[in-house]
Length: 81
Image (cartoon, rainbow, N blue to C red):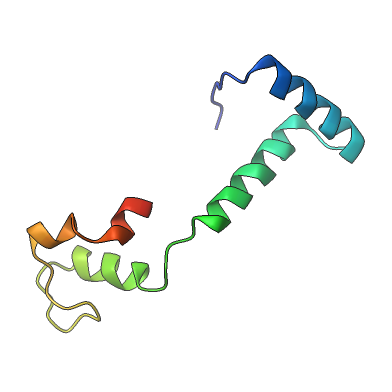
């Protein structure tokens, strides 16, 4: 997918130099950088369970139990998604 991003001139210049040194493209550097950030922001272990329970509605057998609307906004895990 194509997108447009405004990058400060000094960062773009350093990025071009880094790409040449690594014998790669600016695109690959951006992808590597985003992947590194996303790995650091990886959700905690119960994210999948919470999302699954939420998507099933009022399933009280789910690992996180019944989910009420007012509780959704109190869960810090959702602020990381």
